Image (cartoon, rainbow, N blue to C red; front, side, top):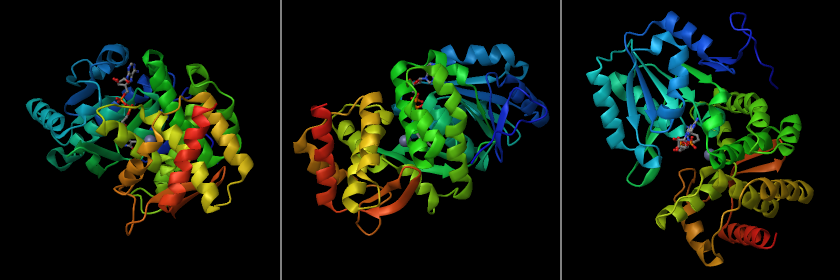
Length: 370
Ligand SMILES: NC(=O)c1ccc[n+]([C@@H]2O[C@H](COP(=O)([O-])OP(=O)(O)OC[C@H]3O[C@@H](n4cnc5c(N)ncnc54)[C@H](O)[C@@H]3O)[C@@H](O)[C@H]2O)c1
Ligand SMILES: [Zn+2]
């Protein structure tokens, strides 16, 4: 479905899309330099977190002259920074730096920096240009693509946000060398989700790689990005097709909320992996067409590659109650995006509580008796 477009100006780069331009390269500085010269922003600000300012910023700055005098805005690493307070701090900093609509915000970081910076930029002065330079695997293949920005509000994730495409996305897989291993595995779960949606060769390749081997992962980043692009370009505002990207996520969000309510956190990707496994059972119960062989195949792959999520069977009713509040629900029904087969996703499937309860129990039985 996809072949990288090799742009004549940058033979070493892959340009995966034009609107916005999406570049993937071992070194994106050439593309970034070209972009800065073409656009010549009045002011440049860089948003980074406490980790990416230490590990990624020096790499970027050493290569790109235009960034020498950029104004650095730093947030604490972690989900707590995706808040209205951090956003207000960024607006203040942008204002202090004399930012206008011909200025630019460069978001250098994982999904937190990208979502928060994208939101701050898309609302400051009714919208200033921003670019995404993702540094976590999850942000490279998922969060930086598709133009969703946002912050958490009133204890609800991504409650406030915008749909706003960045002016460019610059993906340099080399940044992954400083990413903690569990973050790599977490991002791998989203790559597995993309591969399940696409099927074919993409899925075969994913099945055969080791998530902790960042070299192997890098080769698959292009395919993963291309899959997300192909869907979000067709349905930017999630009025239908884009919902397939929620595969595994109805269960994942409930698990994350359960942990959150107990004052604990789990890696998003681990919750997604559990969700992918749980929802194969739901697909089977609802007879979407997913065969026993494929469902078993998916589950074994997940159990082998990604750590499982622990919860107790007494918490299943609470998990289903949490699903009742999912943004995707319609008319009080709990909705899932499921697989009819590997490579054939379907969206908008309603599942009764009984089916969801069984699926959680099946998962628990699987992971407690490997
Ligand atoms: N906008 C979207 O479409 C979309 C899609 C998926 C997820 N998200 C959002 O993304 C966020 C999660 O993103 P994430 O998993 O990237 O989390 P994150 O931004 O917190 O990054 C994970 C951790 O890795 C660190 N880090 C990032 N890159 C690094 C590097 N190269 N070297 C060393 N450390 C590095 C960060 O400082 C952080 O501690 C969530 O808030 C989620 O809601 C958004
Ligand atoms: Zn996700």
